[in-house]
Image 1 (tube, rainbow, N blue to C red):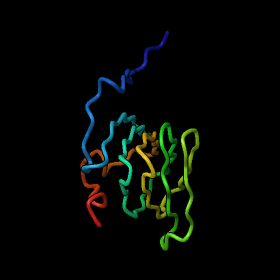
Image 2: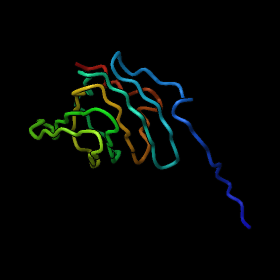
Image 3: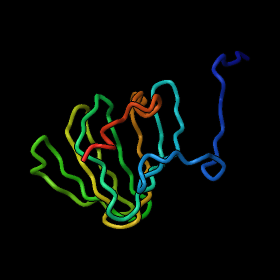
Image 4: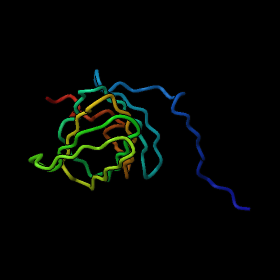
Length: 126
């Protein structure tokens, strides 16, 4: 039977340290070669400033709700609640605000290099 040269890894969210992104946002990351899974914790009122990235994104809300502004002008808005998923294609401008304390699961392909190397400065712009 052939053996894999790629290591299989196991992760338990509760055992992973939370990375503080801002005073109101923190996250935990699991990264593979071609995708990334993140738990993102947002306090009510937390804002993810307008940004875009080449990574395709799925946002699945486990608890709480986020309001999204879509497009460079932010003209399209939508609220995404627990049990709902938002697909954001590559290079689409978006912004989000937590309508209540929220836990979301984000899936990115490929992994977000800016999150891994801490160059995601858009989090700190007003």
